Image (cartoon, rainbow, N blue to C red; front, side):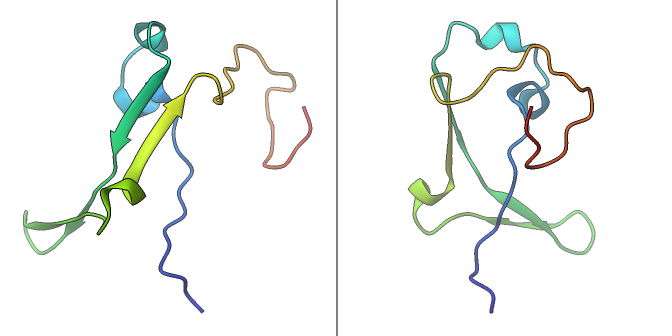
Length: 82
C-alpha cells in the first residue's frame, strides 16, 4: 500500500546550488523550500507544493550534517561501515 510519501536522498550543498562549499562556511543553517515541477505536454508544467509549507522545508544544519573531507575506501556502499 502506498503511503503517499516521496522519499528522496538530498544532494550535497555544492550539487544543489552549483557553488563551492567554502561560500557556505559562515552559515550554520541553510533552509530550502521544496516544490516539484510536473511537466505536461510541451513546455507547460504544474507546480506541486505541499499543503503545509513545513512539510516541504529542508534544513541543513552544520551541527547535525557530517562534513567529509576524506574517506577510505573510495567506493562506499549504503549501510557500509567506514
